[in-house]
Image (cartoon, rainbow, N blue to C red; front, side, top):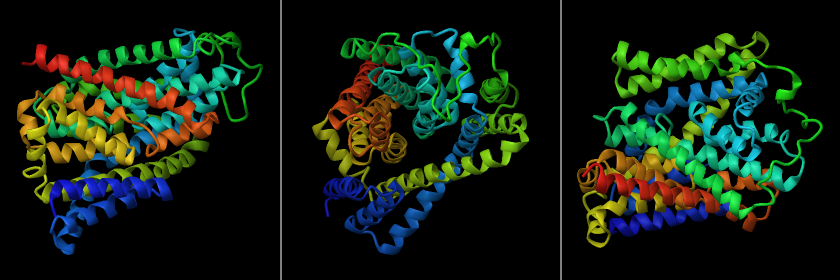
Length: 428
């Protein structure tokens, strides 16, 4: 069968199965990998061997990083330290909508999961607004803020496979020197979107008299004037470990990513109260397992696609119809639309485009940004985050599209424009 047709059929079936049965992406992606391999003319044995190889390759790249991030998140949550972090940020960022967006943005990177950051912030944001409309706006901003940093900043599971595939000879510090300011601009654009789209809900509002059960937010007026250093310690350790690993230890990109996350996790474990240490690590391990297996499924599909000859065949056909500069964006948008996970999109896109004509035609930094933009462009019904936001806000589908899908798409457009500008005016 024509490989491009096989690819379209596979993505269509992944989308349909995801929507109808809502099962974990691991099974839909592995099933898609087997189906694509057979349609591409591979034997069942060869397909299964590639599936296993793809699984192992991704697990080795993400296992330590995601496990450490999940442990940090679980220990913070067990000790109610997320509220302490938000409280400290609130001393600087006093406007609740801006605080919500920036808190999601801030937590998603070291925790290595934007969804986990959102779940952690959910009860905390209930302490900032008692009106349902205003409270929901805070949730939307937290979700969008977490996606923006997660899709752009190194090292997150979205950027890591792209960086390893396309920018192995580029300094991560150089990349982040571009990505971090860009991500803050994109966050600012998203906040302005809500300012004009929901002006009544965007005001400061009134905080409820008490936080819901399970929430913990030491408010500034409670009299605590210091910084909650224990809550910040894992993040500080990660930041300090970056120059140490780069300048003193001379580690590679892969070494740096794993080293700094290990340092952060060890710091969180060492400072955790003994009563919550085991519980937090157990919960973190369970959550990390779910994330890792879904990403490994993406690795299986990407590996089978590459070994089928798709890059040399179908991708070459696409370059005849589409400008090369737009292929990374459109390809990532297609993968994202089919299965909804930004990390899965990044893993598959990195596998397929690595070594193709696209990588030689576009500078690595704009190339990464183009794929990141595509991963944000369509976040709709196949996106598990979409349904999580819908459940937590209680809003209808149309309202979630307006307040989640559209601003995320706007973020993708801004990133796309920035990537094109960098490619044509800076790196060419």
